[in-house]
Image 1 (cartoon, helix red, strand yellow):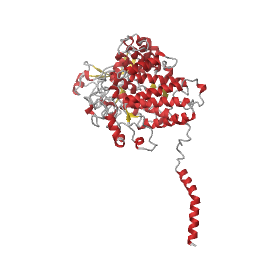
Image 2: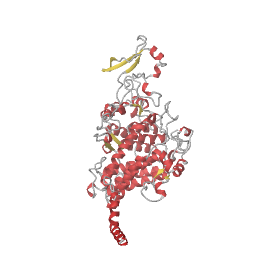
Image 3: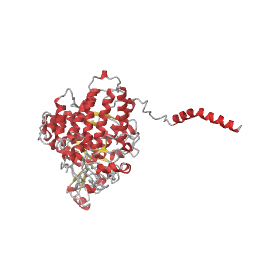
Image 4: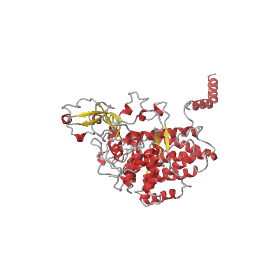
Length: 565
C-alpha cells in the first residue's frame, strides 16, 4: 500500500512538473518592467533622449561650467570650483543610457525601422564621444554586454581613444545614410517621443553631420591627415552632408517643468531649501570680464546687475560701510543701490581697493576662492549666501522651464566656429571670417539679442583677427550652459586662457575625469591598462588617485601636443 501511494505521488509530481516550472518562470518576470523581447523601441527611445538631455545639462551647467569658469559657486563649492572630485567620477549614468539605446538599435534593425536606427546611431555616437572626451580610453567595442555570459562581457577592455573616435565617425556616416529619406518614407514615425526634433529625419541628419564635424575637429591637432579630408568631404557636398547652419535647427531639449525630475536643474520651484540651488551659482569673473570687455549683450540675458554695488569714497566719515547699509542712487538714469565704503573700513579688514570689485553693473565671482561666500564684502556669509555685491544669474534660471532653458547638444554657432577654425587652417571649409561672424549671429539668435548684433560686430568682437584664440573665445562664450564642449576645445587649443584659483586642487585646469572607483575595483586590470597609457605631466601628482589616474594626466587626443598647458 505504501509503495502504491509513493508511486501515485511521484506520478502527480511528474505531471505537475512542467506546470510548476512554467509558474516559477512567470513569477520571475517583473510585471512592472519592460520585456526586451516585446518592448516597442519608441518607448525606450523617449527615455534615451530625455535622460541624455538631463545628463548633458547637468554637466554643462554644473561642474564643468565651474571648470570652464562660466560660473562659480559660493556654497558647496568643492566639485564645482575646486575640481575636488574625490578620486572618482561615475560614468554609470551614461552607460545606462547607452544600454537602453542599444536596445533601440537592435530592435530597430530587426524591425527595419530605419528612422529609429539612424537616431539611435546619432545618440550612440554622441554619448560615446562624451565618454571618451571626459575620460580618455573607455569601454567601447566590448561595452554593453553585461547581460551576456563570458568574463570579457562583465569586465570589458577600454578601447584606445583613437579607435573610439573612429567608430563614432563611422556610426555618424551610417546615420547620415539612414536619415536621408523624406519623412513620409519611414514606416515607423517617432513624432510623439522625439523631444529634440519631433521626428524630423532631415534635422537628425543635420545633427549627425554636425557632430561628425565636431569629432573631426577633435582630431585636428593629433591627426590632421584624418581631420582635414573628413571636414572637407562634408563641406564639399552640402546636399549629401547637410549641416546645422541656422539656430532654428539647433539640437536642444526643452524641460517640461512638472516635477523636479523634468525641470531645469537649479530651478527654485521644487527646491526645498528656498531656492538655494539657484542662489549658490554665480557668474565667474573670468566670464563676466570677457563679456564686459566686448560689450556683449548676452551678459544681460544670463546674469543680473549687482543688487548693490560698492564704492570706496574717501570723503565719507570713518566707519562708513562697516555695516551693510545700501543707499539709493542713480546710474545712467536707472535707480540703483550703492554701499559706500570709507578706506579705513577696507584697511581694518586687510583689504585694499584692488581686492574688491567696484563695477556698478556686473561683478563675477573669481575662480576657486577660499571662502567665496564672503567675497566683495558680502553682507551674508552663509552657505548659498544672498551676497548683494556679486551678480546673480538672471531670474529665468529660477524657473522650472522656459523658452531659453534647454539642454543644448550642438548648435549652428558651434558648427560655424568649427568651420571658421578649419578655414583658418587653410582647409577647404569656406571663409574663416564669414563663419566667425555667422557663429556670433547664430548665438545672438539663440539668446534673443539679434537687434544688438550690428552694434556688437561694430565693436572689438567684430574685428576679425584671424586667430584661433579669437574663434575659440567666441565659441566658449556661445557654449554657455554647454561647458562640456568648451572644455574639449580648451584641452586641444589652450583657449580661453584660464588660471586655476587659489583653492583649486591643482595649479592648472584639469583635462579629464578620474576613472570611477567601482570600475577600478571590479575591472581593475583593464582600467589600470587604460590609465597606464595616459601621459604623465608636471601636474599629475595633484590627482587624488595617484599620478596615473589623475585629472592632470593627458589622454591620447592631447598627449604630446603641449596643450592646453
